[in-house]
Image 1 (cartoon, rainbow, N blue to C red):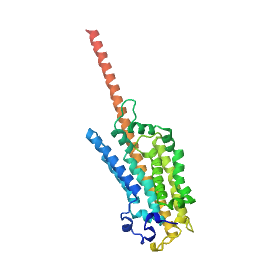
Image 2 (cartoon, helix red, strand yellow; image 1 turned 60 degrees about the vertical axis):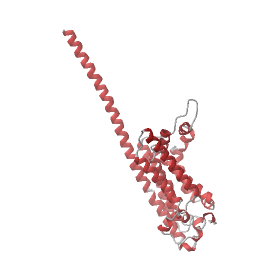
Image 3 (cartoon, rainbow, N blue to C red; image 1 turned 120 degrees about the vertical axis):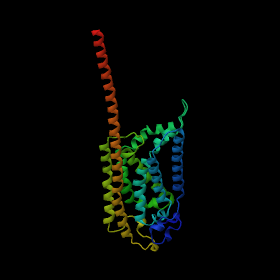
Image 4 (tube, rainbow, N blue to C red; image 1 turned 90 degrees about the vertical axis):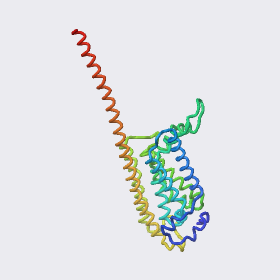
Length: 316
């Protein structure tokens, strides 16, 4: 397996956290992260100049989400991830499960719809194209649980336990494509469950919780399968460079432990976000009911006053 696409990957010294966090940017992800942050910042500034507010919490969530992608792909973690299964698994779990949740909590589509100018009559600008995409059959399909849950599961089993993984890891372009896929699958899976942005598939809160827990056990089973393996299961990581001083089977077991443990982190995060959204939704409904009741009460009072006035007029 040739990893020459990643420069000095073969001669890496033993892994430490300090070495892993050294700067080593992947050009594609560096540009993508900078563009993502720049566009989001432009949207927030545009709203503020217009006198509209945008929650600080959303800005923080989005920025941290993009920075987690940069941390995985623009540091030496990316180089070590080419030859160490455990480091690769950290990359996979963060990019497919943590980054998408944080980015979705930043509501980038809602921001875009509010910040982009409306095109003139009969014309189509970026805002109109985005709205058309949101209402398209394509988005309805890729955000439906019948599509997202199997895809979420297949991204583990069909990738790691077939020759496809080794093929993708054989080149820099393949590795980048795999990471983009992990991010896209994570966004497609979590968007209908806890995304703030408008989407075509938005079931009730209980159904969303069921969708969340339908996918998570498969992550745990995948992790257990790796931990219990008696031989290295993925060719790419069968023969780690001697300079790393690691055993392939021990590293595979560590990767399994990371996959197993990490399935709990997003579950808790998403559950908290869902419960908060549910609470806010109930509050909004209660306020609407109160306002409607107040209006009905006012009408009843007016009718009663009119009735008293008519009685008084009759008496006179």
